[in-house]
Each structure stands twice: as C-alpha cells, then as structure tokens.
Image 1 (tube, rainbow, N blue to C red):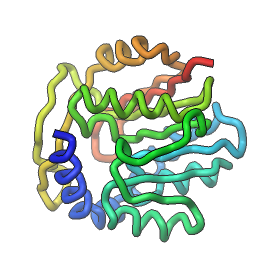
Image 2: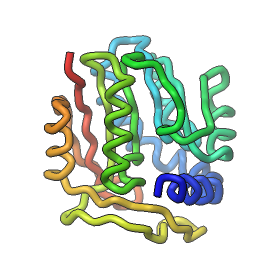
Image 3: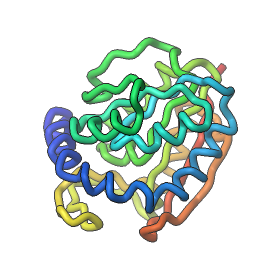
Length: 210
C-alpha cells in the first residue's frame, strides 16, 4: 500500500504543482495567520521541518518569522518551485517515511494538509516519526479539514482543474484528539478557520513530552 500511495502522490502532485503555485497569493493571508500562531510559540531561530512543503510558501512564511526551515516533498516539480522561493534552504525530494532524519533534532514540525493524505495506520507512522525527530518539548503543527464522520479512500480532487485522484483520510476532531492523547502530545493551541475556498480547517499545535 505504501508503494502505491507514493506513486499516486508523486503523480498527483506533479500534475498539480503549477495550480498550487497559482493559488499561493490567494491562500497566503489565511496561511500567514495560522502559522503565526505556531511561530509565536517557538524560540527565534528554531529549526523546523516542513513535511509535504509543496511549492514552499509555508517555508517562506516560517523563515520570514525567524525560523530556520528544511523541507521535503515527494513531487520534484513542487520542490522546483520551493527552491525558487527559498534559495539556500535544505530541500529534499522524497517520501518522508523513507528519508532518514536525526532523532530529537527539530524544534518544530509542520504538517500542513499532510496527515490526511494517508490511511490512518500510515498517518500514525508519519506522526510517530515526526515525534521521534522533534526535540523533547518541541511543537508539531497539523492542519486538516474538519469532517463530521471518519472515512477514507481514493477520491478525485475536484477543487482543481486537473481532476486527479489522491488518497484522502477524513478526520473528525474527536478522532484526531484521541490520537494526540494516545501519544501524550499536549494540545497547546487549537483553531478552526475557513479558507478562501470555503473549506473549514482544524489547526492543532501539540507539544511533545519533555
């Protein structure tokens, strides 16, 4: 399943890269507000890993707020845009679960619209790996759209011109919070927001154990 998902995600986000780039300025105000809640809780100069960094505008926002940011994305075209936007940053093309990172290295992890791309069991692997590479007491930001019922499966991404398939896990608030509690992650910030396309997002900032 992991190999299939990697192939699907790479193909999907290669196709969507230019549309993601075209939407950056539309989404920037909402994203800047969300990420300011994250950076306000971090020390200046904190080392951040942006997982699924796409075209790199979230990296750019974090850097402008005083963070040192690395990025990873499975789609080479996404990373091409991200490198243009973030010259000098360390960026990797690859599958997060297949790339090695030092344990307890990052002060913060950004998973913006990332966990919902996987079946629950693989999403939990991603979260556990994120915890392992975060410093004790570090912060993890997760953002996903709000659902009233939990479900998952391959879906057409209808809100983009190129209607491609991707895997989508629909998380409920209670389900996601149960996951955080099971991993002893302390919720330090929660906010719901409606983005410029009418989607309702659940943004969580959680702290790892010290």
